[in-house]
Length: 274
Image (cartoon, rainbow, N blue to C red):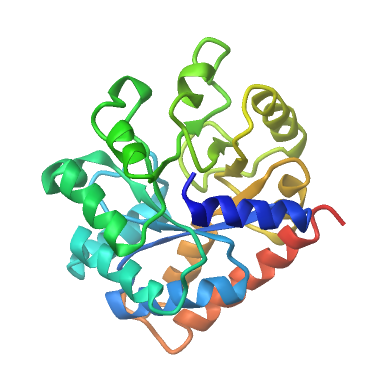
């Protein structure tokens, strides 16, 4: 685990509260606005930031994140600009862990080794690459770990006893438990089922378990946060950005509306165990 990630989860354990992990799409609706949103996230209550790397064929993402990715790509967002966002964020914040989330194709095109070196230099702590299974660890996971970058893996309701050890091997930072079958933002998770699944995975690993997909409200976040080490919210944030736009361009409300939503859900996460 990178030092930033270790420190953050240790601090949260001391405070007896789950992490609030926020996902948003880098470059949506444009570079400047997404940097402003990113810089405002910690103050609004984000403990870990997942920064989306836009890709033209995001198979695990629902309509809102797909649309955000296309808006970002139209604005010229690419991996160098994503690293520039991280650098801009690190000018003011050296403590909040940043996780890049996306697909392997753009990384492969960029060059895996160069991607990892540039990510490390910019101030990235880890990555979630949704289409790289454990069988392909030599591609990116092992080289990432050798640079002290976390490689965060997804576990799902269909991850069975045989598969789980593979998923947990070489995973660091946290395990991202996908609370529902399907694409992002599709349905609301059932807290009782999630609690059972989290307990099951916890029996096999000491790595924190963060739960995402379908969490949209403070109430849902609080319910999930009672069992999990962290709650991930993405589609709700991305949809709020989209709702604030006019002709795909930011308005004066884009940043404030997004951070207001984040603050309201953060409140739910913070009350999860009280």
